[in-house]
Amino acid sequence: MIKLFITDIDGCVSTPFISPDWNLLSEIRRLNDQHVNDIAVPPLTICSGRPLPYVEAVAQWLNVNYPAVFESAGVCSIENYEVQFLPVFDEKAEQQVDELKAWLEREIIPEYPGMILEFTKKMDAGLIHPKKEVIDDAFPAIKEYVADGYPIFEVHKTEVSINIILADNNKENGILRLCELLDIAPREVAYIGDSSGDIPGLKIVGQPYAPSNAVAEVKEHAEVLDAKVTEAVLMAYNRIIQKNREGLSEKMATKM
Image 1 (cartoon, rainbow, N blue to C red):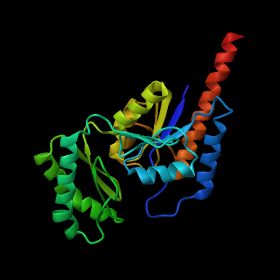
Image 2 (cartoon, rainbow, N blue to C red):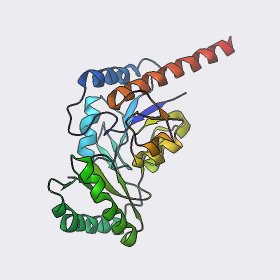
Image 3 (tube, one colour):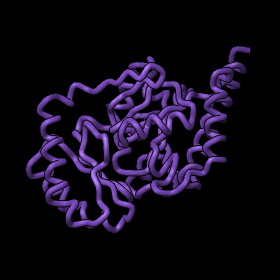
C-alpha cells in the first residue's frame, strides 16, 4: 500500500521556462484532494532541489498540505511554515556554500551570458540557464573544482541547472525525514524523478517512477512511464491508486 506520493518539480510537475499544462495540473490536484475521503488515494507532496519559495508556490498549485522538501533535504511544513534543516548543514557547510557561490559568480557566470545564481538558495549553490548546451559546457569545470576542493559536496545537473549540494543533504535523506515526520516506511512511498539528483530518493522508495524525458541513468532505477513531464506524474498517480485499490480488494477478499 502506497501511503504517500512524492514528485519532483522540474522535468516532472512542469518544464522550466515553459507555461505549465494547467489542465493536467488541475487533475493532479483533484486526485490529491480526493485522498481526504478515499483510502486508496495517497496524499501528494514535493521533493525538489529548487529553493523554498518555488516549492511553496508549486505546493499551492497542487493544494499540498503535507510537509514538502526543498533544496533536496530541507523540510517545510506547508500548513504552519515551519522549516527544518538536516544537522549536516552546519556552520562549516554554510561557509563553504558561500565560498562556492562567490567562486561561481567570479569564475563561471562571466563566461556564460544569461547564467545566474539560483536566488534564495541557502544549503547549496545553484546555477540556472535556459539552454541545455550551456549547462553541459559549464558542468565539467564545476564538477572538477568541487571534487578538488570541497569533498563534502557533489554536483548534479538538469537540463537548465547545475546544483552543488552537500553529499549527505540529498533526496534520500530528505525523503527519509518526511517518512519520520509522517510515521511511514520508505516502502510505503512512491516517488517520481527525472535527473541524477533524484536517484538517491528513487533507490529507497517502494515504487520509483521516471517520466520518459528522464536521463538514462535515472531510468535504470525506476519504472519508466510512456509519458513526459506533467502527464507522467498524472499517469503515475493513477497507477498508484489502481494498485492500492487492487491491494485493498485482495485484502478484503482474504478476510471473507
